[in-house]
Image (cartoon, rainbow, N blue to C red):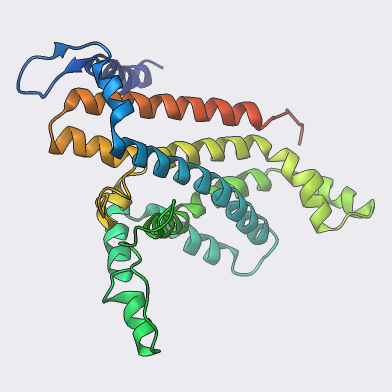
Length: 280
């Protein structure tokens, strides 16, 4: 365990402790850190952009957990019950997960461009497409829905693979016994599959929740947090404050807030999604 413990200590634990310390300091990397107490955290309460970023991050959190759960389970159940072409469809759905999010962000930016991609196709039919990445109307603006859809398209394969791995470990004798007792495939999925894959549901939801809260590269390449900071999330706001305005102390405070949210959401999911040990 020593190599893994050393990597965890020097790559994760020490930087986290440093970030917590810098969050209580006025620090720009050019001068020594100056202790200012809770000033950075009080500034968080007055930051209007942070409120927008927090709202968007929570939207991503809810959207990702719900859609990834539903679509991941649906695709896993569907592919588990087909024989021909299973590996082909599985690889096609999982392929976006292994591609660069930054490259995909640029690709989808052109697809949703006002004069290219989808809008150019709609113009051939005499239709005028919306401003996919620039519309600022509504509580949750259209660009956020677009980016959330793209994120679902990219990462649903990860959830699907996790659920398929868990489903493949369920003994076929359980399903055969249920069919003998009069269950159809829907009831077998409800009363056998769902209870037995519940531990993986908690794991997948935790991964989706943490990933959605840390969401950065795709949204940065598609909108860079614009227009007018309307598509900022916590990770992009942290980047802007730290690497554009050199407010490392304030950026560290945002990072601590993000860490607390990740821990709180993970604990909440593990508390809500009850898991039991079954012998399969």
